[in-house]
Amino acid sequence: QVQLVESGGGSVQPGGSLRLTCVASGSTASIWGMAWYQQTPGKERELVALLRIDKTSNYADSVKGRFTISTNKARDRWYLQMNSLKPEDTAVYYCNAQSKLGNYWGQGTQVTVSS
Image (cartoon, rainbow, N blue to C red):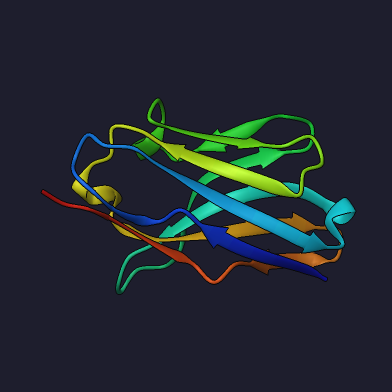
């Protein structure tokens, strides 16, 4: 089992920055992919960024060049640095761990971009 806890959400003006943090515990050695998803009301969760243990990554087209996913050496903590935020980035952001034991989710953290 893997447990995930996110932090770092909040309210920011357009053009601002936020950094989300996901802390993983439990069977973290089984994790091969670390990701962030976003969800807005009435929509399905969508992938924002994925970082694999081979250091390859994928980003949604809407965030390329603005968001960066990274992890620490132990791969039990990962981050989403969000720059040049836009109102359309407003969503609940979920931390996700893809592991040999299954797919795990955090509880979500709200990000609101508004003037």
